[in-house]
Length: 173
Image (cartoon, rainbow, N blue to C red; front, top):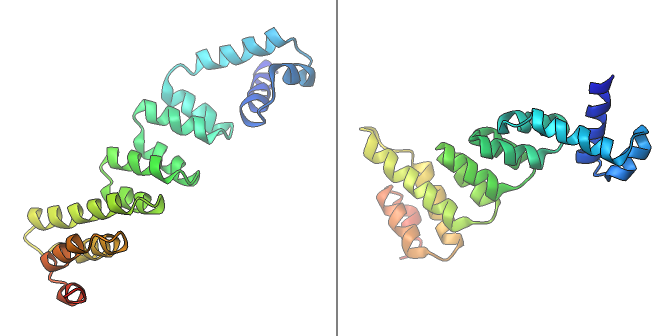
């Protein structure tokens, strides 16, 4: 019963944003009792990953994402930031994890077209250097389109030409 009450108190505080006083009235406890339960819950969740799971189970996704980030679980943090439509933080998490294409998509969603274009261009150029087969020109095309969108026409033409997308490059000649 005590665990159920503590979980209920945590939901009231972290999800419903109720004050200690309001929670105390709701569950019939003193403010110090409520504070103690919440403090004990925090102590039990000392490790960041454990804390993240607790906050996630309580529906406090902002806190969960922050704790996953602190725990170094960038993929999980990125996924939660994405669900929260916090695309900039999602991009940062995916980038830290090495998921460059996903990071570029998130930067694009956040309206940071230059960073997205730079990442797509890097993906295209690095992929070409690492493999004997031609690199995926969709990265070059996406990069060029985003450079166009931001007025960086010279950079767009440069990428188009490196990808042999002569038709796209010719539009600016």
